[in-house]
Length: 270
Ligand SMILES: NC(=O)c1ccc[n+]([C@@H]2O[C@H](COP(=O)([O-])OP(=O)(O)OC[C@H]3O[C@@H](n4cnc5c(N)ncnc54)[C@H](OP(=O)(O)O)[C@@H]3O)[C@@H](O)[C@H]2O)c1
Image 1: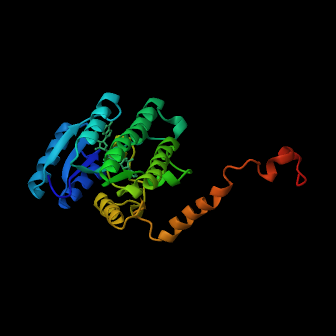
Image 2: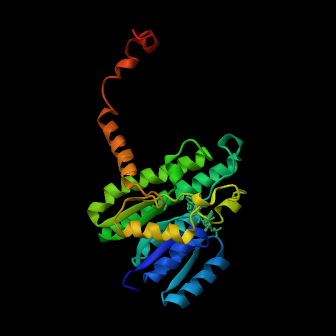
Image 3: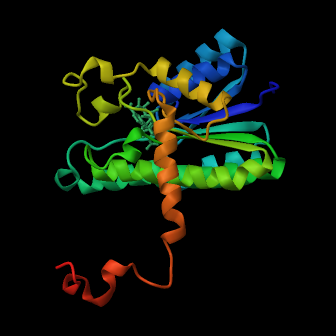
């Protein structure tokens, strides 16, 4: 076991997850690589073990299947060497929500929400009990966007952002770091898998996956609970979040707002 312990990474067979695997091996973590494609996982594990001298294990699981997800949860509970979890596996669905295949939408919601929730629960409890650990949840900038893409995908990523921020509150007093990462468009297979193409997207909107993961890990090192890799003006995120904070005192009161009293449409302004 290395000093850093083991980083468990879901969706480690390609894209962002495979890049986390390489960068975390470089930082001296042993690895537990999780996804469905055994061959790709084993190839990556062999390469990283060779290149960095760390131990790399593979756990093949389809995280949309309850019994396979449970296997990963159990590993997170039982393996005290696991000090970091990257909740990264995810998928998108092509097209507008109403035009998309609802069965694929259901798989997406299971993978993007249920799986990270159950894995965060298992790892969060293990880390809290040990008073140490790191939980990285890969959301998306679409968590903040209502105007574009498939609304169910965006909503699944809003879910991850909210859960992650809530876990920051719960776990940081126990010495556990929680970070939500919000990538913008990043060049990976996710688009091919959803039958989409990056060809019509302006090059300046597309980040390379190594740039994305390096920024996310730099954000982790800075202690950020939310990292938006391409956002230069951090004060804009802080203002956005502060505006949310301004709403809080008024969100649950015994009395409705004045515009809703006296029948709304019959108010004196009409
Ligand atoms: N690329 C972007 O522009 C972008 C932007 C914002 C957020 N993200 C998020 O980043 C995360 C990683 O995506 P990516 O861009 O790196 O895409 P990717 O290259 O398609 O990688 C997705 C990973 O998830 C795994 N996976 C898919 N279905 C799975 C299942 N049912 N069970 C277990 N593992 C499964 C895949 O491996 P197997 O096929 O081997 O299972 C693969 O390792 C996702 O959560 C995505 O929503 C991506």
